[in-house]
Image (tube, rainbow over all chains, first blue to last red; front, side, top):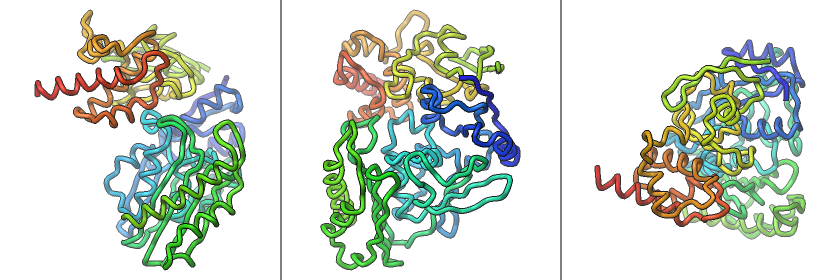
Length: 275
Length: 158
C-alpha cells in the first residue's frame, strides 16, 4: 500500500485534485469500507483524498421547507442522534441505527453507504422510498441523480471518476407521512442484512412505496400507490418477492431471502398500522 | 511518502512520522509503543482495537494515522491511574469478565465510552455498545455484570 494522502480544505481544491487523478484516486470519508479494501489490495490508488477537510460537507440541514440535506461527511450516528428528524423521515434514522456497530457508526457516512453500492447498504432502502437525490460535483459542474438510479449494480454506480457525492437531498414529505425500516440479520451487531426493506406511506400525495435491499444487485423500489387505500400487505409482499432476484451465499439461500422479504414487507405494513 | 503526525494520546502530545497507509492502530502500537490496543481482525469486526478518538469510540484499524493528525486519542493505557486499576477494570477482574484477555482492552474502552454517554445503561444498552467487541472465551454475561456494577456504584456515589 503506497499512496499519497491529501485533505483539501475547499471543495474547489478537492475537485481539482480529483480531476487530476481521476480513477487513480480514492475518496475517503469514514474509511470503514475503504480501509478494508485498501488492506485487501482490491483497491490500489496513487492518492487517497479525504473529504472531511471541506467544512460544508459536514452539514446536516433541516430546511424550513421540510427538506433535509445530508453532507458527504455526515456519519451515521449524527443521523441517529438528530432529534430534528420528523416521523416522516424517521425511517432513515432507524436504518442508520442498524448499520454495523456503534463504533463503525461513529465513522461511517451515509454518502459512503450509497457510494459503495453494496446491495445490503441499510440507509439506501429508506432513501429510495423517500425519493432522495444524490448531488455529485466535479470541475465540470454538478448534477442531481435520483436513487435508486444512482446505483447500477454491485459496487457499481453512475459516478464518473472525477465526481464526488457532495450532498444527499431528501425531499419534503407530507406532514402525516411515515417511513419505516426493517432488517433481517443472523446476529446482533456486526452482521450484514440478509434482507432489508423500507416503506413510505404519504397520505398527502397518496403515495405508498416499498424498497428492498440485499436481494438484487441494485435496490428494488416498488410503487404501490394502487394499494394505498387497501394497505393489502399480502399483495405487497407477493409483488416484492416477485420483483427481487436474490443470490445464495454464505449468509443465506435465495429461497430464504425471498421468504424473509415477504416477512419484512408484512412487518412494515404492521408497523404502519400500529403507528 | 512520510507524513508528520502530531496527536495527543492520554493527555500526552506525541510527534512522529508515518506513511499514509499506516493505520492509527499500527501508529499507536509501532510508533508510540502503546501496545494495550490490540489487533484482532484488522477489518473492523472484532473491536479489539477500540480507542476513543476526539470523544468518540472508533476502531483504530479503520482510521489512518494521518486522519488522526491533531486529534486527541484515549487508549486503554489512559484508563489506569498509576498502578491502580480503574473501577471499571477492577470490576472486570471481580466478575471474571476476562479469560485470555485479548478482547478486554477494547471491551473496557467501549464500556468507558458507553458510561460517559449513558451513566445508567440497561443491559440492552450495554449489549448494543459492546456488540462490536467480540469475546471468544468468557462470554458476555460477566462483562455486562461488571459494567452494571460500575454504573450502579457511580449512581450511589452521585
